Image (tube, rainbow, N blue to C red; front, side):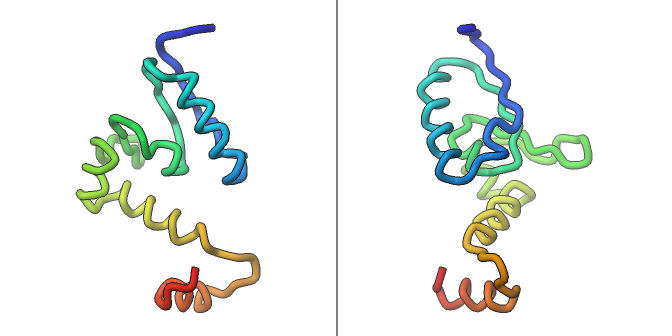
Length: 107
C-alpha cells in the first residue's frame, strides 16, 4: 500500500551491518516524501531523521535533530558513543584490550 504515513518498529534490528545498510538504502528510496515514524535502538537507523524523540522510563527525555541532540551531550549522544565503541569489539577480547585499542587508535 502506498500510505502517506509509515511506521517502522525495529525494522533492521535482526540484521547484520551489511544487510542493514542495504535495507536502509532501499527504505530511503521507497519512503521519500512520506512521514515515517521509526522505533529503533540502533542509532544509525535514525541518523538521517529530521527529528528524534528519545524516551527513557516511558517519558520523553530529549528531542531534536541528530546534530542538536549530539550537541546537548545527553542520553542520545551517550547511546551513539556506546554503539560506536562496541562496533569494534571482537569475541574473546577483554575489556582492557578494547580500551587499549581505542586509546591507541588501533580499531
